[in-house]
Length: 266
Image (cartoon, rainbow, N blue to C red; front, side):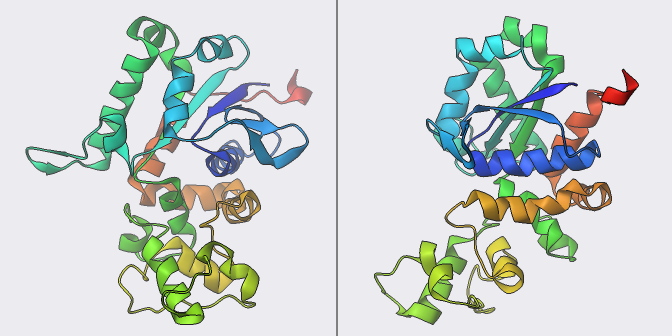
């Protein structure tokens, strides 16, 4: 079976991509191998080492990256663009804010430099780009909203403002209690104020209403539950085109023309 190596910012990103792949190929038993960060062998909800955008670039510069093509059919590289300025990619040019497609192109160009043009040219057909503009949480919005503008949102998809609004409303403004654990203190979880700036059209807003939790703390089990919906091929096909960078990822997969050979076909 064809294998996929994952290089991502974190464990939650890996989980979302795993479920997207399962839905795209209509196969929940794909051979998916987390490379960066590595998954804990004894607990799928934990990873070893460190996860961040800087670690994604570091891995792509490493010997491990080059050797990974010996053991994996395809390598998926994921990174968010919310802090792209920190890794040298401006989100604007002389004409104003870059489109998602323009930003993705610039990020890929940056990776080509980090990887090395010669090596990239040799293996580019086996690299699948998952550049999430501006975060992978934006890819989850089509699961919870019907309005096109809400489904295609690019900024503040998770919304820190929403988190602060909930804490102020239900714990008290200036409370020392962290919002990260608020879902542990309140059952059912509170509903955000709809008129609060940033409190509308965010992932956390709908998660609170429908699942009684938020994902500020990046709990893997929560991301697994949410993105599990994408393991259904029909759901995935109905949702991915609503978000520009999500669409780019699925188009990337399709462009490789990957044919999965089932064991019974051998």
